[in-house]
Image 1 (cartoon, one colour):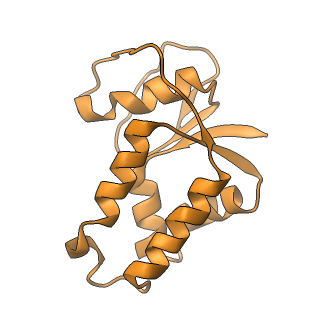
Image 2 (cartoon, rainbow, N blue to C red):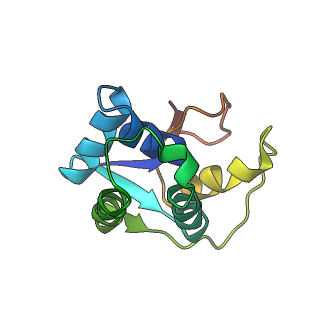
Length: 127
């Protein structure tokens, strides 16, 4: 199964824009076709995003439905402990944890809308 890291901007787009590819990616995880990886840092970022009510003013899902969706997603994730901090010095330092998770969890893909980056590790693609 393909191991992936899904940035919070993909989850947010999946919730806000039902017709977008982001929703298909989330659906593939929920159907067990991709294995999403989760770390403590990424979990807290997801929690932070969902707590920002201003982001969801035009959202078709209620706060409870968004929380249920996140919980369903988290139940499909493999939790990865990060023992080594790898700092690739991305433009947004706050995104370094995505690279760390991908390396620690041996992910094949990082799915984000945030940064184009060359990853100095074989077999990780940034989409």
